[in-house]
Amino acid sequence: MTAPGEGLARFVLKPLVLAGCLAPFAWLAAGAAGLGGVSLGANPVEEILHSLGRWGLNFLLITLCITPLRQLTGWVQWMRLRRMLGLTAFFYILGHFLFYVLVDQAGDLGVIVEDVLKRPYITLGFTGLLLLLPLALTSTKGAMRRLGRRWQRLHRLVYVVAALGCIHFYWQVKADVREPLLYVGALALLLGWRWWKHRDRLSHAARAPFERAA
Amino acid sequence: MIIRQSQDVRPSEITSEGVYRSRRAFLAWIAGTGLMAAAPDVLARALASAPPAPSPLRYTPNPRLSTTERQNSWEEVTTYNNFYEFGTGKADPADNSRGFRTRPWNVAIEGEAEVTGSFTLEDILRPHPLEERIYRLRCVEAWSMVIPWIGFPLGDLIKRFKPTSRARYVEFTTLLDPQQMPGQRYPVLDWPYVEGLRLDEAMHPLALLAVGLYGKVLPNQNGAPLRLVVPWKYGFKSIKSIVRIRFTADRPRTSWEKALPREYGFYANVNPGVDHPRWSQKRERRIGSGAFWDRQPTQMFNGYADQVASLYGGLDLARNF
Image (cartoon, rainbow over all chains, first blue to last red; front, top):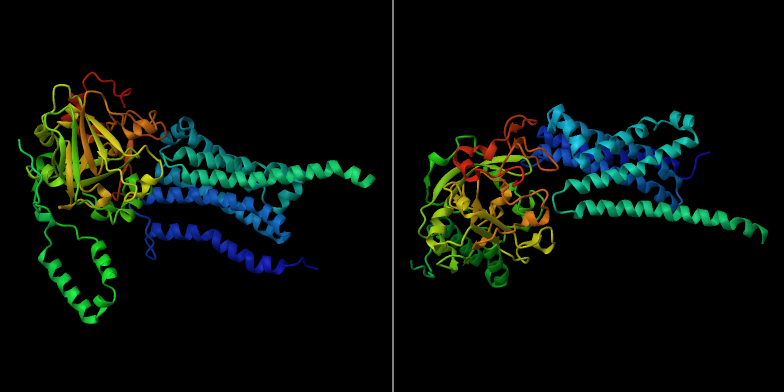
């Protein structure tokens, strides 16, 4: 027996979302290769670096939308998208880092080490990437099974990573903080929702014995 | 010195014959189609807002003060801009400054000078022969370009107003007009934009007031109609769309200094030895040049050390960044 909408989720929604996940990368790749009339402007290195970072953060926040979506709609099939979206976030963030190391700084280890140690926004961004690594590595079904309850606890790190990502962005801009503030606001909303739900559950649990008695 | 208001028309403002003829042909065609009668004000608006073709300027090249490095393309120079009055994205200024009105334009001369008052742009420009200088421009964001500016020495203009012995600094202010400059509707910086130089820096022959680039009238996104170019300092010192020049005894407080004093100082001399708190200034990316990943070493005073280093004898450049 299949759950309601499972076919729709697996064979329609998932491929569509996958295409959406890869679209920004395809756009940047086309721009870098000068294909299809895509232009990355006068400073393509900066454009690619910033785009990869921004899409990494976008997909992190989109991943964090899945649980609220499930709770709001009651449709559990949303969960089928979560791993793919999370791995997409990791893909862009790792790409952002590798592009910074290999292209933006042309592999100059001296500069990179100095950046990571001396510049707080880079230190934070790098920490976020390091914390994301174990999550990507334990994203398989096998790892979920092996880790059991600990898997969920480990994967709560994603909240920390998202917060680090937002601060990394905020500290990086020169003066116009409107866009990073938008991300901070979105993250606050997503975490606030969880906190509210959590409090709700706790108070239900506390009330439950009395309800039974009555 | 007599500086009068005048209705003179500069050669750059005269409609060229080609444009004139094509306008006539267009009007004749419109009249023929009967559109003129149907929607006269729509048409009038369309004609008024049509961006003027960049007019050519008359100037003499100044090879002595020009670099021979490869110049950035018109496209690069006019589509990748920091001009926060028109938005903080690099492409925003080109997009949002299309309708910006640079005529009539007045410049107020104020403060510690014998000659002060409000002057039309034409008054400001009239006595100065234009020259072309190809300068390096190094942005504080660690990218750079090579740009053929058309302008005249700032010092020549300053002399006309006879600063008094009390004048030690020159303060420049950009137009404040949130209606025309959408970026000013949000306090990214404390508008209007203010910059300043020490008077001896301003009198240095390399300090240029620019009215054009690539032989044409300055595009709006590059700071039309009148901007400063100080090639040995980070780009943000080179204030755009100037409406006020004030001679002062005290050091002006500049916009970026006010916004982030830890990161942007009054001097802002290009200096590979003093990092920005958030990034290294040792190297720079020359826009549109070399391989994708190339960065070149940044030079002290952006390569103008021979000419300007003597201005800063005895000054601790790490503290006075």
